[in-house]
Image 1: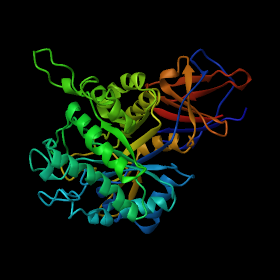
Image 2 (image 1 turned 60 degrees about the horizontal axis):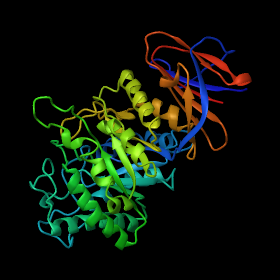
Image 3 (image 1 turned 90 degrees about the vertical axis):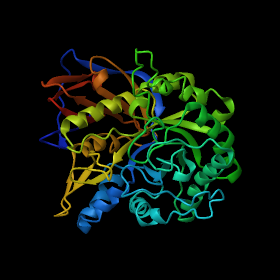
Length: 442
């Protein structure tokens, strides 16, 4: 059997590897179980990324989009966009900051026409059928308990909730007028995060009321085919405190996700669940109770701006957790940032590429190679496969629609290991050096 082997280490990236006759006891084999369908991979269209890309040469600008969205590169088929400002916007904004504008007469996406929409259109040159999902980081400030983009909660008043539901509808409709379809809207980015950047906390009971009585009916009445998702869940993030306090308790499965999903009417409006960060702690509980829903990872954990190889290894482990727990889509966070990766609000984060703001030099970072090890080879429509053996916790396996098997294997140990794939006459072995990623195509 012919096996294609591509590997990357910190020093040698995207290299051709070899395989040999099967040997050793550290094996991996397939169980025969076919699991969820893989729908695609992508990243988020953030303002700081678009701004950074304005500083690179025309050749590098084109190379960025070609590498991420063409079949020869990462072959991203999806993307995320913010509804209003997020933590990697250039500043605070929403689509309607006119206090008390319940009829949304001043609603506008003019800001998006300057940054987000051009970013998306460049990607669509290579991926015309790009699947997009959106979410707010904060409602307009006048809809919140504190009139600021950071901190606070939605005002649980009928007039506010009606206007906010229409705010979602208008956002999708305005993008549609631009020739851009938004396929999914997620209710709130990280409803358990009270941050210095745009954010909004939600209780499970409040989000239940909003989805069931306002947002769901508003989308149903609009006639839009945009799906509503319970996302992007980011908790529980804290352990229950054993000092008679209830810190973090409202983030647990029963207090948040299950409070909403166990309501039959609310659930009828929801297609799936989006999870990121601490959401990985409840994905198994949610899927076991609601297997009929769809699941996606909505934001890869962001790092510290140093773009280290070690953090790429950490992200491989996140991929393993999410794919082994049923997600269909995997979303990277910042696709492009200036060197240092610092946000408007002072948080340094990783990205697929960095740009030197003085010279315009573009550098491909470790997590780009990790994403490519997966998304370049795993086609939309692939199935996640069950695995067993000593390498199970280091491998994610897929079967593409054309029948090819894809194995993504990682080794974050400090020593070389021998990987042995057991499949009868199609068995093989390969040396897996320390701190490396490998893709095998069978």
